[in-house]
Amino acid sequence: MAKKTKQPAGAPSGMAALYEETLRHFSEGAIVTGRVLDVRPSEVLVDIGYKSEGILPISEFKTPDEVKPGDQIEVLLEKLEDDQGMVMVSKRKAEQQRNWDRVLANYVEGGIIKGAVKGRVKGGLIVDVGVDAFLPGSQLDVVPVRNPEDYYDRELEFKIIKINRDRRNIVVSRRELLEEKRREQKKTLMDEIQVGQVRHGVVKNITDFGAFVDLNGMDGLLHITDMSWGRVNHPSEVVKVGQELDVMILDVDREKERISLGLKQIARNPWEDIERKYPVGTRVHGKVVNLVPYGAFIEIEEGVEGMVHVSEISWTKRVAKAADALTVGQEVDAVVLNVNRDEQKISLGIRQTEANPWSKAQETYAIGSRVRGAVRNFTSYGAFVELEPGIDGMIHVSDMSWTRKINHPSEVLKKGDEVEAVVLEVDAANQRISLGLKQAQTDPWSSISQRFKVGQLVKGKVSKLASFGAFVEIDEGIDGLVHISQISDERVQKVKDALQPGQEVEARVIKIDGVERRIGLSIKAAKLPDDQFVVDDSMLEGLRPGEDLVDLAGAFDEAFGGSTQTEEWHPGQKKKDAESN
Image 1 (cartoon, rainbow, N blue to C red):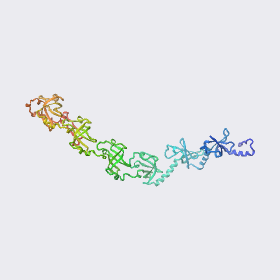
Image 2 (tube, rainbow, N blue to C red; image 1 turned 45 degrees about the vertical axis):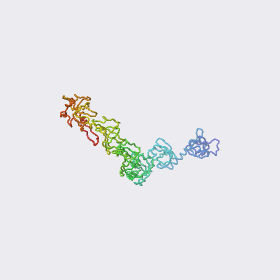
Image 3 (cartoon, one colour; image 1 turned 90 degrees about the horizontal axis):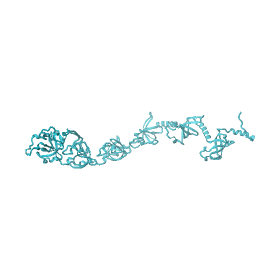
Image 4 (cartoon, rainbow, N blue to C red; image 1 turned 180 degrees about the vertical axis):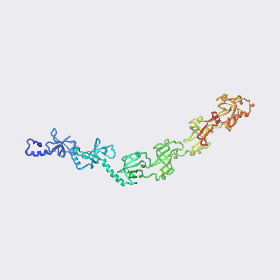
């Protein structure tokens, strides 16, 4: 039997049926309409026609001002009576119930519904579609989303993937909707697209070799070489992800569904009239954009670069690599040396912006003129003297002394020494000036016949010993040779047994050859009285021309056991080997 509702004591018998009918409409979970009686700080009092008023939390309204006494509202009965005998109601749950009923009545799986992302939960997001729906994280967009917050509170369309009526939950996907739409757009795009068209797109992704551009249907590749007429080191220098831009369709492969795009092709090609714009000899201004060992690339306008070879950087400095003279970002002036429009190449010269100091070298440094300069550097075969900034002259070791054999320039000179020299040769084409140090001094051999006579007694110090005799310095820079046969009346087996370097000796001049720069001496003849001295063949036997009576250069070589020196450059010649005498 059904439980009867107890009639309140004292209730009129005519009201019994009405009271029972009223209670029949109130049950927990039902939605009823009520009238607002009072709005309090934390709650709203609602008359739903029940024996007790309903209590509704004020927090279920967006703002307290949204509700006022007398308003009619729908609420859901959560509890007919609490401990205080009050009815607990919920406006929010009533709205959710109505929305859920509406969703079930109007939407099915596979349908499209609008909603807004309102927060995160484990594995995805909550979407307000009238009721809370679950959106898996992977289903928000066609690409991974790093910041879902960017999608909050935006009205979006979603596809209903699943509806569970028992559990009252809905799973939605925005990605599937986008992919379906994209497939339709892709088909339309492939039907309409043609090579040469200019299309609007959005940069979707950037790689080292280019950028992928969304053409509203499918992606096309914008290769790095088609981004600019000029140099591009990385695609990020030209485009950014999310950037909108117009591109030209360069190629369409419908079978593989690939599209090649060009950005530079929609701009004027600066190389088309390059020969007219930059004729040979034009002076240009530009910025160094790249350095390689053999030269530097200079951007003279957007999309146009010229190359300066290391040999065209300076007239006077030997530039081993471009980085020794230039830096990336540096602005320079240059002169156009050559233009090749077909290969898109321009040759530039920096040194041509200045006068070539070697062009007047033959006039400035006439052969025979005297010049002064500081010793700047040594090589094994000579010394370089700076005559003016950027112009050096070279003194070969053979032109350093009239009387001495110089094996290395450091025997005569030091770096930084100020020297006076005579110009011997000028080769402006090869940027060489030959100087003579000894030529700026008096040749002591030029007056040798006036200073010394055959038969004259001289004194001097032994300067060097050789197997065939000894060299004796009889005047500054003048050595004579005492052959081993002329050292003593007694037989001398080894020169060192009779003479020592630095030893003072007296000798008699027995031969003078100013042309060959040779003086023969005899120590044993010095012991003879003047009236008994006579030069005979026995004295000269060991001093025959071409053998032991030699100039210092050859004699010193023999004295030290012989030597061979390779000369890198000698005035009047390119290269030869110096032979020992």
